[in-house]
Amino acid sequence: MGIHGMAVILHLLRQSFTKPRDYRLTNSAYNRIAETMTSSTTLATQGWTQLCLLAVFLGALYIPVLANMARQWSEDPNCSHGFLVPIFCVWVIWKRKDQLRSLLSAPSWSGLLVTIAGLGILALGVLGADNFLSRISLLIVLAGLVVQFWGWGCFRVLLFPWAVLFLMIPLPAIIFNEISLPLQFVASRLGSSLLTLVGVPVVREGNVIQMSSLALDVAEACSGLRFLISLITIAVIYGYLKEPSFVRRVWIMLAAIPVAIGANGLRIMGSGVIGEYWSPDKAEGFFHTFSGVVVFALSLLLLMLFHSAFGWTDRFLQSRRIV
Image (cartoon, rainbow, N blue to C red; front, top):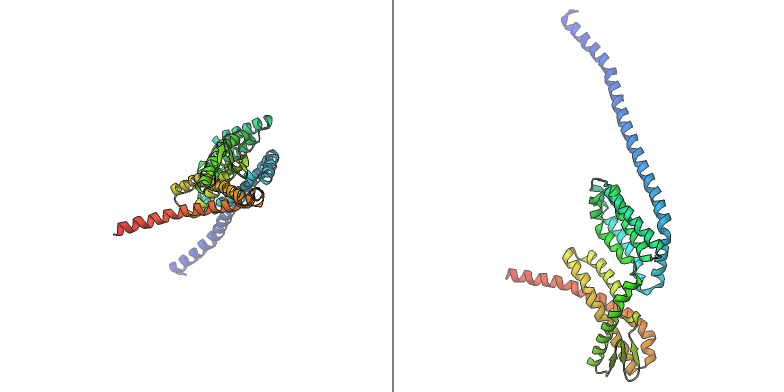
């Protein structure tokens, strides 16, 4: 056979013995991969099970709180913007889903302390029959759970929509009255000044504007606080959608305060003019309701013009640099 023939036979025998060995190693690798996938699936299933149980627990605690708050949104005109806020926040979170997926999960036990603090505030709210504390506790508990399960990095990404959720919570009566009363005097003072400006003689006593044909009582509902809270909420949403600069978003939100107060003063002036030169009944009937819609639309237009002023300023400064 010769040396060359023997070498060929040995080579073939070596291949025949190594093939089953390679096959067994391949099976072992596949087994390890299968075990890893099974382990990952088990962990994912356990995670979702824990989240579902946690959702059931939170639902049992907070469904009465949320139902009570939704009822107030539907019954109190000062809080009707509350329906819009959670929808907007869910949309913002959905827009940031890719950013959230790219984050490395870094659970922190400090979130447990925040969660316990939130549950303690819930207990105080329930025992003291304080709806505001019970509602605030929900947001604190949500923040704690995010930190505990996903970490502070995830919470920083969700900080803006989480903070906006506070706008959906109606102010407690004590704070509402403390803000509403000064606004009543500001609105009555501004309304009487505008009426005098257009030639209507008035005498103001506190929050009552006395004219020759009627007396306008600037009550709590006419203080402009309803405009103020709703307009601030709309300004936050508008700024997020239309303005990339954080500083300018803050300016748009702050601009909502004088715009709401000024618009409410115009509404009072309009009611006075209608009552003086047309009919007092017209000033307190349909016109009073319709004017609220018109003035709110005017307020939104003023905010949009204020935002447009940023663009005009940028173009002016850019043209000055070119020259």
